Picture 1 (cartoon, one colour):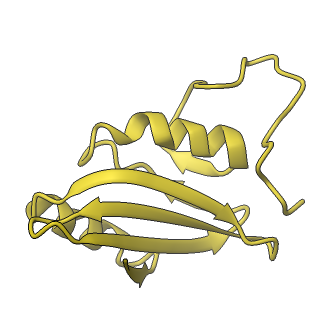
Picture 2 (cartoon, one colour):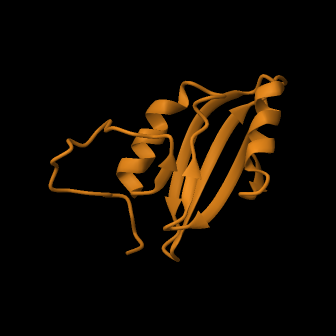
Length: 112
């Protein structure tokens, strides 16, 4: 698997490029590094069948952007990331897995 680190500054350009290439978003995964940073990995299949991952790492309190405007199926996984890790993701609202009044919050977060 090919992992390509991306930055906040080139995030939109990289997502636009994948959309123009007609790459298929197959999954988005998150990782709380335990060092007050979050990794969000955008996994794509490109036309030749290769899997490419774009990795964006940001501080635990920094905002991420939704990619639903380019990849509509991302809506479910983005909501899951917000609930499981407590990250802020611009454009993502509502709940997917946890009830609004659930006693548990961000069960996958390691960093305080």
